Length: 96
Image (cartoon, rainbow, N blue to C red; front, side, top):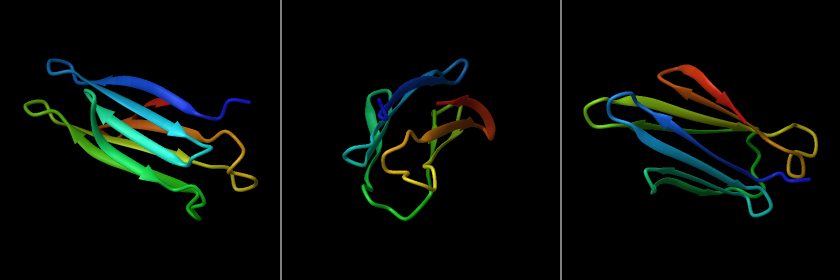
């Protein structure tokens, strides 16, 4: 079963930016990039938190708030697929 996550999404209308999310579950590493530049690199292999939140702003002239929320299952969360929700300006834009 594949439990790693890799996805991209675009933020903005006039000033667009590509946000990439990478989750390596075996190693417990999360990476978030905007236009290829790292904004988060976290390692949490055996964390007690059920939900991890990655919040940041994207854009210079057209600013948007981005929230990526990763939630693990309560039971055997380390070996089961984890759910990710993406919000842009507090609006749900994707679930992975």
